[in-house]
Image 1 (cartoon, one colour):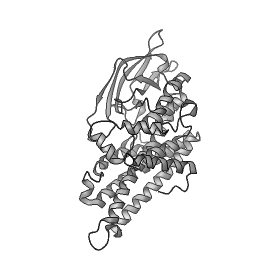
Image 2 (cartoon, helix red, strand yellow):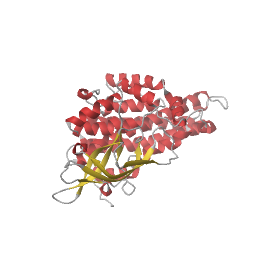
Image 3 (cartoon, one colour):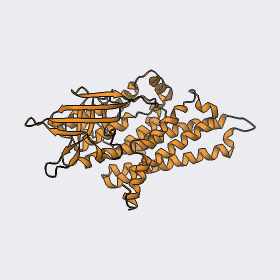
Length: 388
């Protein structure tokens, strides 16, 4: 894919990560998933090379870059067939929130460890009865008398990687003393906290990162578990959700590129009649369209990352949603067309495309559905009235 619009340092980063990713590749990740493990070797080496913390402040062991750099890392790992889903969660969401709003103590405790890969953090926001509507979140936190501690109770679902995470950044709600209404707040919950339990969700999607349901039963947390200002919850929450959307776009684009590369290679070599099947427009044109869609999605992802890194949260919100939508659609189409190009071979383990049929749908569904993104653009960008 073209890198002409990227600055030289981004091109260098892209090339380095691509070479690194190829040393692991799809076969490595497939083996780890089949064994029920986690790609720890890939994660640790990526950390050692500075890729995991590229977006975190230099003062706390990071690379001093932004989401633009982190998205390049995830995209290229995906294009090599070895994406790391927890990059969306640990450095992008949790690392960003703590870097922007955490106390000095929280930054010192977490950011260097997130950057060097020695610790990871999960993120819990979705609930059984509160998916896209965050106003229905019922996980609540209340003060425990004079102790200053928080007591956190509630449930979360579809939380990735809790089993490998040292802590989970939980979105809860506290009561506003002035109005009595509930407002969102974020809490760092250690994995071994009393009353904090998890149950694996049985998924048809087979990946290295497992999905969990969490139960928080009067989990006692010290006052310093609260991240940032109690009165700035929405601002802090969106500071993590915009990078999440941008990184999901990177995840999807990388996956689409991997599938498309497999299909192109096959179409160049597979000969049924006189010429390779890639010479036939019925094969070539859909692959060309998939390439165009992925390129366009990447441009919007780059715009979203640039806006976010420049501090334009409002502009980044619109662009991040557009990028996630475009990348999800492009990924699904690229995977589908790649499978069709290979025919029966597209469903074999040898070529590694069949599992992507399910995995590619994740980018359409999570972390927000394409329908809710269309709602957002309808209301926020076009100024149309809400139906809800």
